[in-house]
Image 1 (spheres, rainbow, N blue to C red):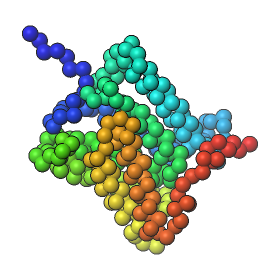
Image 2 (cartoon, rainbow, N blue to C red):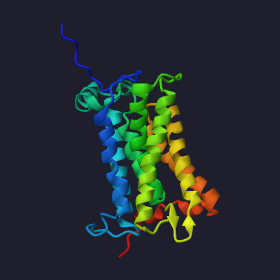
Image 3 (cartoon, helix red, strand yellow):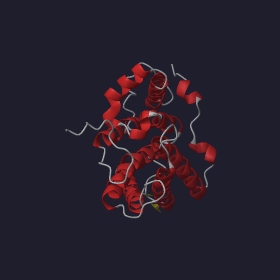
Image 4 (cartoon, rainbow, N blue to C red):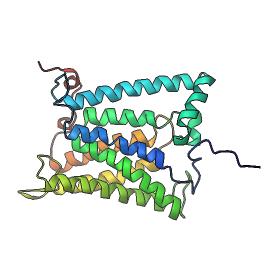
Length: 261
């Protein structure tokens, strides 16, 4: 008798097959912070805000989050919606997400928050940590994870994830530093090495995967907790080392709705 087709991408067990489709979705999400970094919407938008691309991305991701929340509400209350949802999204779901919020909701919400309120480099770093650190942890943990903890995650996977996050963030900061981009987060400038930015990067990459280790499925999925948590810790670290006030790191909501005529 043929083995029934597996409905979900994984069941959260050690050695589960790596979910390329789910991680590819994370890669697509990089369009958001990089689009913000290069202000790709500034020249084509009919609206002009203080920072047009950032504001438009904030509102688009916010609307998508609300749309996803409506879908979640419907599928948890009506079997028809649940069945339709599983048929469409099943290959990208974890088994536990059948009766819990699926990871796309906190992921889009995280993009909305980090782009809307945090410095652009911090926003990009936090998404890079998720996009590359999380799959690195899954790959290393699935293949070499021999020391496992209460939640099924492994020491090797966590360390591999930290390495993946650090390399991804380092490449990004090296690129903007070499290109002499005007930024408070370059690794060096005409005055020499910017030690506070090196430390901020290292702290962020470590914290991101520690957050991943303790995260759970549902609203507080690592898709939300890694970008937001790592961003806040990097902001705190940078503020402490540079002497800048914490208040200067956060954007005001009014800037997202103020149209410049």
